[in-house]
Amino acid sequence: MNYISILEQCIETAKERQEQYGEAQESVQLACDILEKTFNIKLSIKEFCYVLVALKLSREHNKHKEDNILDAINYLAISLNSE
Image 1 (cartoon, rainbow, N blue to C red):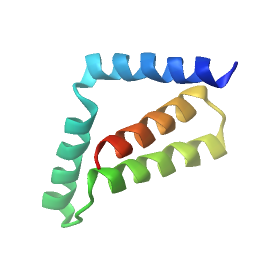
Image 2: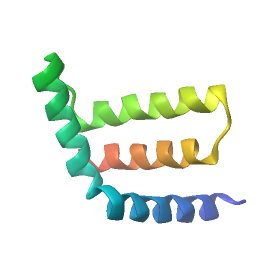
Image 3: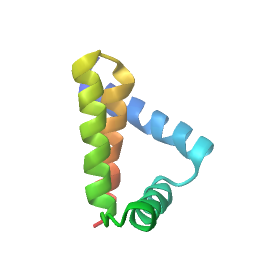
Image 4: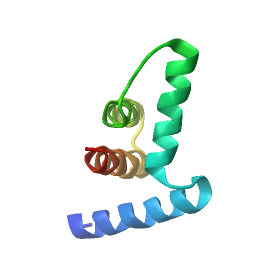
């Protein structure tokens, strides 16, 4: 699979996630707010996305699953959109 096909698959995955869970940046912001209120840990959207990328890569290290890579790419894209 070439990288353009992978990026197209990332777009399709992002659209599916948005239909299921709503707009990604809003969901991540809500998660940041919950994290701060519950544990007094303040992370920006960008930082939170980096944590999620780390999680996806740790899962990939344990067992290959294409979804891990697609989600990691999408979290990186969300982090760029938060600046």
